[in-house]
Image 1 (tube, rainbow, N blue to C red):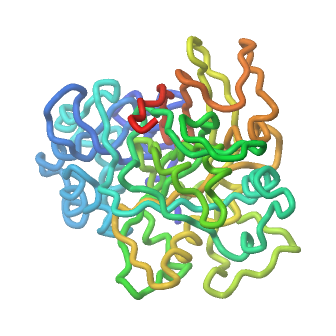
Image 2: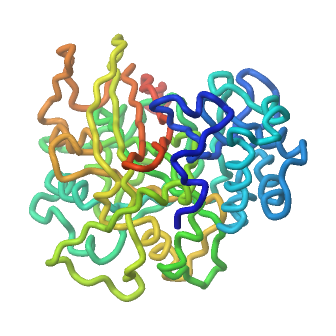
Amino acid sequence: MLNETHDPGLRSWVLSAQQPGTDFPLQNLPYCVFRRSGSQEAWRGGVAIGDTILDMAAAYALGVFSSLAAEAAQTACASTLNGLMALGPSAWSALRLALSRLLRDGAPEAAQLQACLVAQVDAEYAVSAGIGDYTDFFTSQHHALNAGRIFQPQNALLPNFKWLPIGYHGRASTVAISGTAVARPHGQTRAPEAAAPRFGPTQGLDYEVELGIFVGPGNPQGTSIALDDAEDHAFGLCLLNDWSARDVQAWESMPLGPFMAKNFLTSVSPWIVTLEALAPFRVPLPREATDPPALPYLQSQQVQAFDIQLEAWLTPQGEVHATRLSHTSYRHAYWSVAHMLAQHTSNGCALLPGDLLGTGTQSGPQPGEEGCLLELTRGGQNLLTLPSGVQRGYLQDGDSVLLRGVCERAGFARIGFGECHGQIVPARPAIYL
């Protein structure tokens, strides 16, 4: 699955793409939707290279693309990337190869394309797709165990977990771009000793370290996507933070799962990293000899995981230094990108280009690899003491949370996901209180 675009020796005429530690070398080329900050420019697609964005509308207007790459580039000029997502892997790969060659050191088009670069610090971003539906999954065994020990200690890992990727439908209307303020939500909660529930601002606001998967070509209603074909329907991955109100979740979740505890906001990063860019970082799925064999529609020797290192950083209100709370890897996920797509469509459910899937909270087996405060603090009972002496059970107003993701492997270029961040602001007045 590797090709010339993965060559670690490739260099770009965009000098910042060679900077040590950059998330966006020539071997990455993730997509976004952007415009210059504070402008009334049209939103359009862009590609990250170093600390700049290649404006796809401006580049396409120069006529530097041809054949299938030109068709794909034209769709990337739009205000959403749904059209590009719908084209499928042949078009995506053709455009990636064309971009790689155009941005390489010595490309004859370099002088023309220089004028198509916009500094990332001068840009603002939008969610990259018109999201028709959003489904959040539950794919991390370690998160399932840790959360289960808190919510249902008598049966921490439910018997269905190792048989299918479990999911629930979220709200596409509240998926927002990184940097959107996180207003503390109201909800109904009930303390264990209380005779009746109460309604008010959550006291259990939490982050979740996740990845989002943007769907590419969909499937007609009544058909299914085969597991071995599923990655052809995945355009790429982004960082995702599915903010959660744990006290609301504890009261409402039985029997139908999360509802108001999670539908108030889901943050996504601007950058979508393609599966082709992630090819060097594939690893085997974690399985144990005692695990049950998957049913045939979820069984394949080809399906793999991705070793994407994930971090969550907290900056408390009034402080300038962030503390890393979580550090894990997507390699620990029990169910893969392909499994989620195959399961979602196994009953004939139609997916559409631009639909969003969440991986669910990603946690690992070791201390410090917990992907949320629910796990780190045992449901808010064991307070975390930060280097400044500040303690946290759950998030307080003014706190900022930042997610990062990166892939690193000897012999290949470092591939980053940028950042996904949000700051907690006080609950809005509720007129019915």
